[in-house]
Length: 153
Ligand code: UDP
Ligand code: MG
Image (cartoon, rainbow, N blue to C red):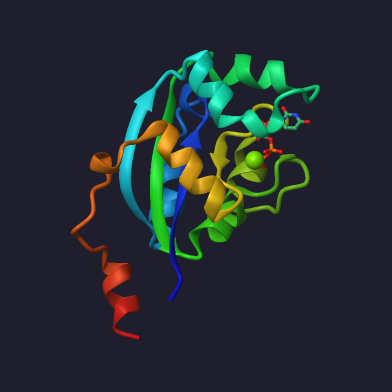
């Protein structure tokens, strides 16, 4: 079983709209394990590191301004193929193209304010996790019920 870690963040619009609980619930109900979580307002430096792949693109300045505009809830989430699975739960970037039932389809209207961030590969996840968390902040050494049941297979 391929257990991975991914970096998830509830963006400022999600926090301001009171959707923290709903977003976390989607990942918890899937059986994923949250092993680290914090609320912070990203600095420009953190935002630049997070979105370095988008540097120079037309939407980059607006994206950095937006992600630094208020608090986000940053999380490390663990599970079987969680990078892909979490992106599926989030829905595609553009909320009006996202599948109904996904976070972005159900809660968002415009691309910039699409509620949630999730890493797009295992490599991106490792890079993004290290921007927001230290290894000591990972709460390992306990098991979710989903994890126990999957381990029995
Ligand atoms: N974004 C935007 N305009 C665009 C493309 C992206 O405002 O034309 C924002 C949007 O909030 C998106 C983020 O930049 O979530 C990062 O873009 P990416 O292509 O990595 O999408 P994601 O991985 O978040 O689905
Ligand atoms: Mg992305």
